[in-house]
Image (tube, rainbow, N blue to C red):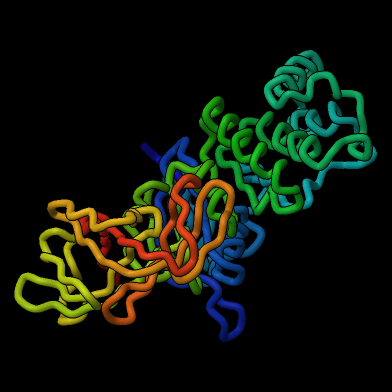
Length: 355
């Protein structure tokens, strides 16, 4: 199935390479997020897709038609795309209805059809009763719904979103994540979403492309990205983790205080004599006595620090032998005092070798 394809894409500003040799294929109807820290190149990539800036290398094509190349690009208004910005960009002198109808009027859709399509779309975003209000009379979440309705009502080939929830408070952001996903499930518009918030990307996306210093480090489904990171950057950027450094000898990996058969690890370890694994705090179990579970690793020690986060306890566990410390996430009813003796249970199948 045809879709949006970025091939060897690059963008240079003077001597600075904002995007470097980026390759990404997005299927028709797929929702893909570009996720990464500030300055990683995600917004530059989105602006190249939109046609606001031209690539200095590579191409962008949609359904087999080249939109952008160093030799020339199709202007934004001829790409059949809609874009939603951080600032909503809805017109303050127009009502909600007029804002949503604007794109249809530009396309000279008959008035009766405009009225029907706008009312249908406003009902989809739960703004039907507010059609006659002006933006100044709306909350931030309501304004973002208007921006979403205006972008979707024209049925674009691609929907682009540039950190659209960053101006909302935490509760509204959480609500709008699910609203955006619900809209995508209903209309199946090919969507590219830029964010630095991993929770937004995890909730909304079919796949996430994690970017770092102008490159894509890994593209995967949210669950696989979290549970099977391929690089140190991805493992640390998506959630929290413990990095354990060890050495390989024959068929065994040795770490501080324990050994693991290489065959028991979650993935094949990279070649070489050294190995680094990522072990999520949620994958570690705390016990008051040696659990002695077959196939698992048990280490004795004590609780060095703790913090209650509401949904979990965040513990710092210090092993009795050696200097190994581990971050452990435990349910609210798993209560240990600082200094208390404890055991941790480690599952080799949760230990992910990374590059």
